[in-house]
Image (cartoon, helix red, strand yellow):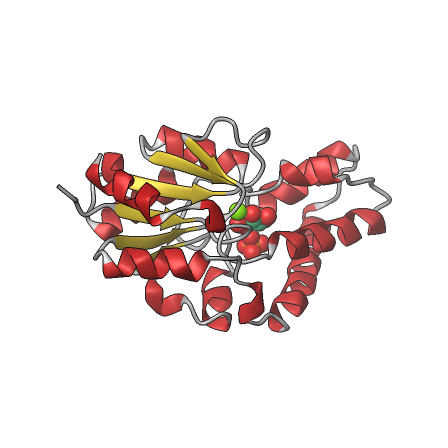
Length: 219
Ligand code: BG6
Ligand code: MG
């Protein structure tokens, strides 16, 4: 028999193609401090909070800055990121995200957002998807960053679904670890080599069939 489950979606890199904007903004910031910043290092920032991301970049560059400059760098990064976001359209919704959301809605499933971003609501409004979510848990609601399971556990609570009845879609290693720590089914969206800790991995949502969703609902 099909049961009601909780489906919790990460935002950046899962619903929308914003990971590239985070990368560009961090890269420019690193360059301005003469710190080199590779795509591999960027992978380690996915799902990681703004504050922790800056701490890591400074650590990699062996640079220390006074608190005031640290805060100013955070603002600088976010302002550049918001510039990119302001130009976003529905074209930046990743392939078949809407199909999967609609499938889940038709099947009367509970849907939440579980993101580290403090810009999550702005982005969901911008791409007209905010109404699809029954609960939105973002960087303004959590105290512990992924890989801590807090963001997903709050999501489950808001949906009123037990954690072990929840499914998480994530593109980051930290996010998959958070979902696993929350005792949820983790679905990696992206490179299988990077996301190997996930219970299931797909390159993108176009590979997720209705049959796969039906199996999740009956197991
Ligand atoms: C995560 C991104 O979703 O949100 C990270 O993967 C980002 O790259 C984090 O640092 C925080 O986002 P924001 O929008 O609050 O700076
Ligand atoms: Mg992400």
